[in-house]
Length: 174
Image (cartoon, rainbow, N blue to C red):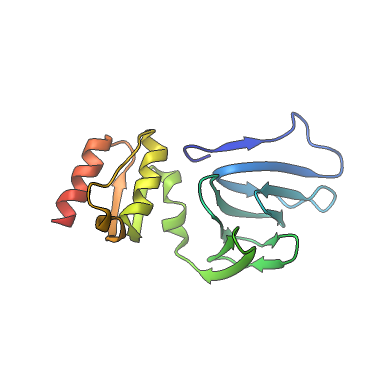
């Protein structure tokens, strides 16, 4: 589980299904079992796992749910749509209009949090501020609103303090 995340699951899975509910971000490694399919439920979508490794980002304060497939195969379903993900693809469920798009993605960047780093490529400072706010449990405010759209590339270690991280971003920006 990534920071600010919550996973709800039964003490013992039922004989006919394995089902969990995710709020936030988690990476899963699941063994295929035809008799007991594994499903991850999050706001607005259901992921049926067919033996695989994948990452789900479903934070309550965001309007998109991202599912990234590392290996194997998963099916993403909403009330009206069903899509299959292939390795190195990411689905983006827009909760505002209930549409799913699938695009190629850099898997290593998407799951870098698991290895203790923040990996940002072409991310806006506003997007980065959300990630840092969750990890360090702080509120980040912009004194200049135009800075929110500035794009940033970099890899930063999670063990660094918030001050060190912000200083690195400031030095890079200047």
